[in-house]
Image 1 (spheres, chains in turn green, yellow):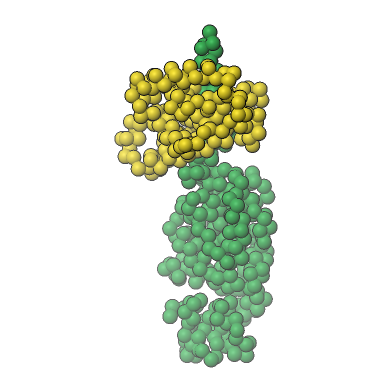
Image 2 (cartoon, one colour):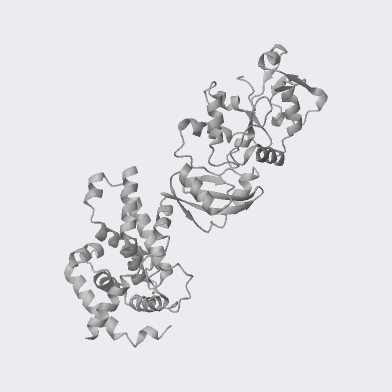
Length: 257
Length: 173
């Protein structure tokens, strides 16, 4: 009799069900689903998704539900909300402030889009490049519009700094991460002198040359930072700069050297 | 690779409750049960991606997962006695299923803790036989022991369990 009772009891132990979200946590652990959490950043609250390959998505969504819906549509993988690893918030802060490079998971994007986003990662904080620069650098000089599309669909804005790509006529251009206003705001935060940049662009001046070195750069290039205004000379295009005896900067590469 | 992912997702959905229950019965608490079950599936995934398709097709999933889980538990508790604490729901809530009411949950946790007090070889045998209801052949496979040994361990384990009802189990708690 006692034995029968025991057996019944033990069988009940086998009826225990896994807690809610168990299967999703398994899928996240093996990299088949992404984890996400909300982070307070310099840009305000940002939802960030990641997996074992790196950060896979970021968005300033209104709510967790909105972020989940967007992720399902855009990325198509499963998503699990988790308590973030202790060090992730600091890593994200470092990335957004330009002190660190996180790894990114760009699977699912076309090779072209991946090339565009990888190239965009090379643009330093405080600098901007035109769409055409990306197109030329990745070996598709005619695909300027396609570059625009790839950047507009950047699943990891802020982290992959698509806001640092603007139109060559000085128009800030559209921004997937919250419209032109947000783009302007982030660029200012990063120290880009937008008024100066746009004044130059409106006058049709794309490049700045430094008289002493005879090198021409994009106006936000790091190498122009220490130069006094009277030592600059401005050019409309590459031909004009070369005719004046200037060569393109090897860092910002306004033209093929 | 794509196909393996689909197989694995099915595997998780089909076996998650079974493997979690196994983890609970073998470790005696829900926190370790989650760890063991997660670890089991992660190991299963890592193995699965290295298997050729025909091996995946012919896999006896249930016995295979049990074998992995038993090894996970053996490796993590090597030389360590199972904990006797946390009978009274001091565990952080992992969100029980809707059908698990509080009373039932407490009873089950107590039962699991009692089973966890058995020495490992008896605990494994009793749990696979009477909690998971595996056949002796499946058990022999999962435990890596001959059928005769398994049967003897089940028998001794049950005997011990009955003997412990009002004895040693409460001693350290």
